Image 1 (cartoon, helix red, strand yellow):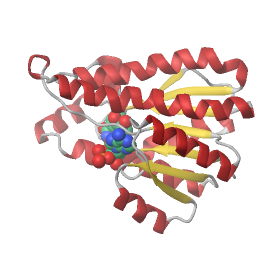
Image 2 (image 1 turned 45 degrees about the vertical axis):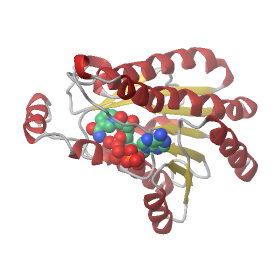
Image 3 (image 1 turned 180 degrees about the vertical axis):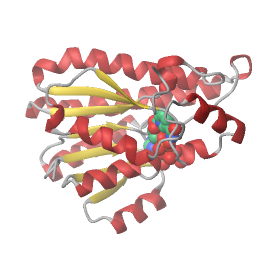
Image 4 (image 1 turned 135 degrees about the vertical axis):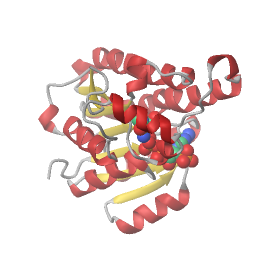
Amino acid sequence: MRLQNKVAIITGAASGIGKETAILFAQEGAIVIGTDIQQDLLTALEKEHSNIHGYVLNVTDRPAISSFVEEIKNKYGKIDILINNAGITSDALLIRMSEEAWDKVININLKGVFNMTQAVVQVMLSQGSGVVLTTSSVVGRYGNIGQTNYAATKAGVIGMTYSWAKEFGKKGIRFNAVAPGFIKTPMTEKLPQNVIEMMVEKTPLKKFGEPIDVARAFLFLASDDASFITGQVLGVDGGLVI
Ligand code: NAP
């Protein structure tokens, strides 16, 4: 068990990468606090896994985040791990992208990471330890047509990860990001078949990844095996970004 008795908060835990990470962390002995806006999916996840506790929490809601973090601190006495994973897409070519689509993606994918980290880091500072991991994307490293907003957020979280690694290193808190390539989840289900085939062709390993591939990277970075690793971006992309 690599995360025995660790208290881990995972955002966007009801689906895809977050769900698989929640299940893997629970199997590794962690007490998992899975947050999401999908109440029914969270309830189903809780029912199947006794070590996963679901909370409806929108990463854009700062007052709710503040009360949530207070509640978790009081209930469990600590927060060891935060996985900033909740994210959305709202794609359009630049000339057609609405201000609403820009604001929505920035608010969830970028400001949501700021909101959650700012609240949780205060608990980590008081305990003198912690690990914060964030889901970036290959798109944050090399861009993508039609994803101006998404690319900005996924590059932005890398910049925040670097900054926080420097800011909190001496306080015993590690920050890293994982940059998945194309992973089979509800987010990528809506991609057109020709785009899927093109991405597989461009990927040296010639396939899409599975959510468990990303969950295993999070497990490594969250565990003591990564105790001298901070400020890094780990690609889980089948070699797409080389
Ligand atoms: P997913 O299956 O759609 O899971 C994301 C979860 O986050 C959903 O349950 C979603 O709810 C929830 N969520 C959305 N807005 C939220 C909010 N404001 N507060 C809390 N939860 C919210 O997607 P995924 O593919 O697992 O993606 C997880 C992360 O990986 C995202 O950050 C994504 O950008 C990143 N990523 C994914 C891929 C990929 O190929 N799948 C590649 C690179 C990076 P709704 O369903 O209601 O939106």
